[in-house]
Length: 140
Length: 250
Image (cartoon, rainbow over all chains, first blue to last red; front, side, top):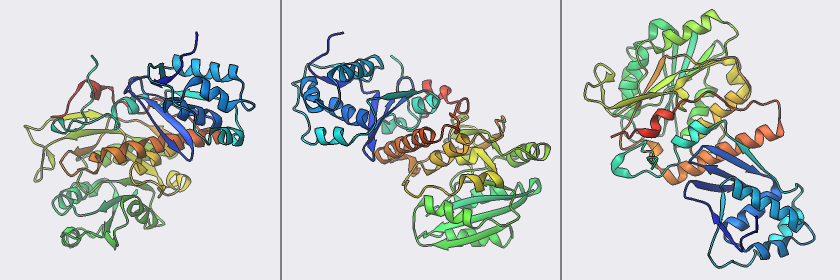
């Protein structure tokens, strides 16, 4: 699959946060959650912020192979976390090369589905106040 | 069996008496010890609790400056008596259904190695404060959700899990439950109705932004623990919430 110039978070069902520099991503549509290695967290943060693919690969040069980054992006797209975007690619973060140099783990994302019931329903979905809680988005 | 129920209270004058009555009516089912932690209420919550203590010597009230629900729950844990065998929780605006403790304590009596029961809860919008039952015109749904009151913990398990993580502003209960399940306790999932979870405008869970970040933090911490310690268990087959997916509350 040819890589896109830039990616975006695939849908509003994909929500993510960073704790101590580590990313955690939830897919509210199927309840899966994703954990990242330290380098994977940095790359996820860059890609989900709209950093261009080329700029990312340049930032990682000498630390992570382009082929490894391409494989990682492909995996994130296959998991439904990222989708090709038509936005203008953003330059890489200034501190990304140093962050990747400091990372000790290879690019990796792990997928879990043991909390699916909980994640699909409670309590992340946006609440429309007049409907009260729990108001879960209807499957269209 | 000595059962301690921990109830943090903060400005719940309107509800706390009903919550306590729902426990006291179950005195016959257990050697009940109710630990109320008043977290610096500025309304009449503490007076309301104290008035109940005249008729129910099983209530112990402790007051502290406002420190938030997580520390209040930990204050409760620190007040457990040496003889406490089982631990549960009830929030000061919820109701413990009649028969809730009798049903699950029976399981502990039959199986001395049991460490945790995790039962069902009803979300309900109207409760009659006299009968302590949902009103006829109430809307409700019953699920095996994520709530401390669904659980009765053996003292041994509580000692193993440790305190609530005070890093959490919210979702400390989710974190505590995830930690409980991760250690792979001997656990039963009875159909007991363990809680009427009252829905009203002041529920703390309405603070959605903080809530969702804290919930994700609980999941992140669980992943991290399991990565560091492969002997911990995934948390499969506990929660049954799918019903909520095509249901709207009001």
